[in-house]
Length: 52
Image (cartoon, rainbow, N blue to C red; front, side):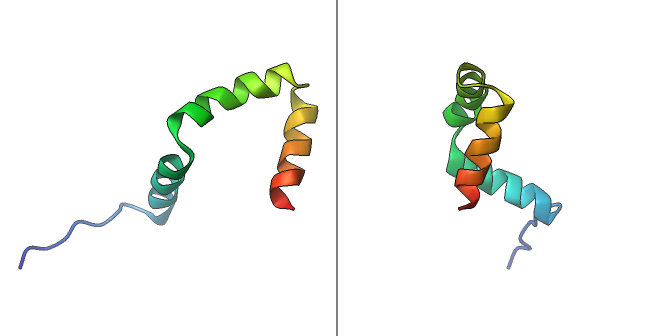
């Protein structure tokens, strides 16, 4: 039986899984949305809403 390859690190796996789940379009769109809606204040409120 052939030996299976492994991820280099757990962090690399988490980044790959997150990128797959979130999608590239949303990652590119987020800075635009943040800039249009108040910059740092928008990000602060957004992170609070995500945490709740």
